[in-house]
Image 1 (cartoon, rainbow, N blue to C red):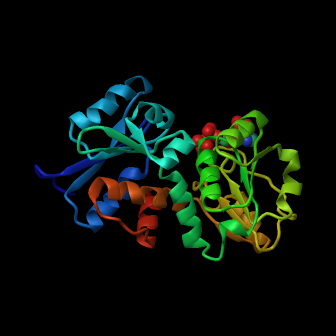
Image 2 (cartoon, rainbow, N blue to C red; image 1 turned 45 degrees about the vertical axis):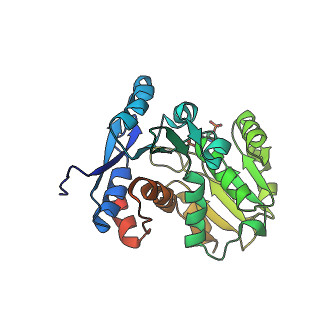
Amino acid sequence: MSSHTGKTRVAGVMGWPISHSRSPILHGFWLAEHKIDGAYIPLPVRPDDFAAALKGLAALGFAGANVTVPHKEAAFALVDQRDEAATKIGAVNTIVVLPDGRLEGRNTDAYGFIANLQHNAPQWRADAGPAVVLGAGGAARAVVHALLKAGAPEVRIVNRSLDKAEALARTIGGSAHSWDELPNLLTDAGLLVNTTSLGMNGYPPLEVDLAPLPSHALVSDIVYAPLVTKLLSDAKARGLATVDGIGMLLWQAQPAFEAFFGVRPTVSVALQERVLAG
Ligand code: ATR
């Protein structure tokens, strides 16, 4: 157990519910690794209390906080200023308390997505071909922004509700498509990413015929429970390169930890094992 002092820097994660969040384990690992006098705690905040909780962060002297479901859009609306990624994505996952007590909202999910691909599939290049993104929810917004910023020549958004894909394409970029177009969209793709809930524990598996994909294509899933989804095992069976979703969770936390505690931590195998152990 760590002990705290009068100088302990405090941060946490606000969500509802919050008991399943892995962020306290993740940041706790880094605090111990770097022997930092800090604490990172789960903060259960009901939606109705979110605005009050946000004000409380500065009042309590917090260094900042992460924000998760269902507060990411409310955080975007309520902070005093936003970084470029948060502005584009329309959601905030990291709040930094500035020295004057004002709150800056940041979004590190796009960074986390790209850093994970670059780390685990260094041969992959964003500008090498079109990317196909399955889903148009909150996670898809970060992924589409990340890919466009990284230089993808084209981002094709495929979603069950076409209107959501269209709205995403309008606000962030890319083109909107329905599922029946998927086989054609895959033929020249360099990347296929799942951002839907399909494949997650408790949801049906994601069934995609990967045959049209070129052999150099990378297949990635942001679902990490289970770690190897049916999409990824199908891709591996075809000899395609794959990247699983746990790394995005680890990498999105890196800049947040640095903002809260002043040290840029590394994403190690030991960290991943600790987070997966729960
Ligand atoms: P997140 O914040 O993780 O992105 P979300 O905003 O709830 O979560 O988005 C969930 C995504 O999974 C959406 O793209 C959703 O499609 P719709 O916009 O059509 O609802 C997709 N999704 C969830 N269940 C699905 C299912 N059974 N079939 C197809 N798509 C599904």
